[in-house]
Length: 240
Image 1: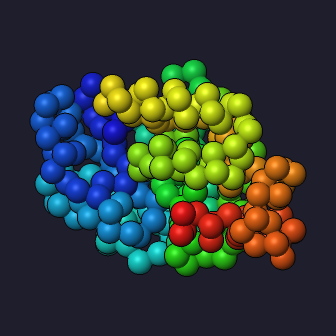
Image 2 (image 1 turned 180 degrees about the vertical axis):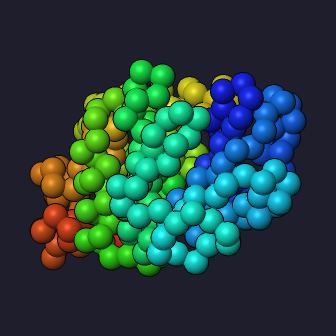
């Protein structure tokens, strides 16, 4: 949730109840809803919130979404509490998945990336191809290093366990895993991450690195091209 003390926006509300509770607790009026893709755990609360608050809904232009909504395509922008969020199309997890990027919010960029990029991982490929997902992740990895990565699931510790299997000698990864374990033990979120952090520790952003290529060949010796290595990593993670 983003708010200015009076109006609020939410991203990917899978359930209306906690949003309505937060609105009541902080005395906020819901002005808008940003949706990244069509899966129910991201859209399940949209209809109830729209009916209860009259909030405007924005979502991907190429997916089956709860109507009515404003459909958004690549490079279109939406004004959120005076901030401009640009749409980035990131197919892979779903065919029409989008992300929302603001170049400056409270002194640094921010990215709402749904289920495309997680801290230490990425989303499963339910509708897109490995080549599409790799291209989408490379687009996000090219954003400024200080971009805050606001993904939609707290999967970090599970992802880092796999990342350590892939790249056991990555010191930055080991340190980050320890940091995240400390946060979770204190019942604190590991998120947001940053693009710089993910470039250093996320195997799905590092599939051209020699250490990652070598590890992927332990799982599938036939893959050497970058998109093949990425596909191998994703298949490996699916059964890890």
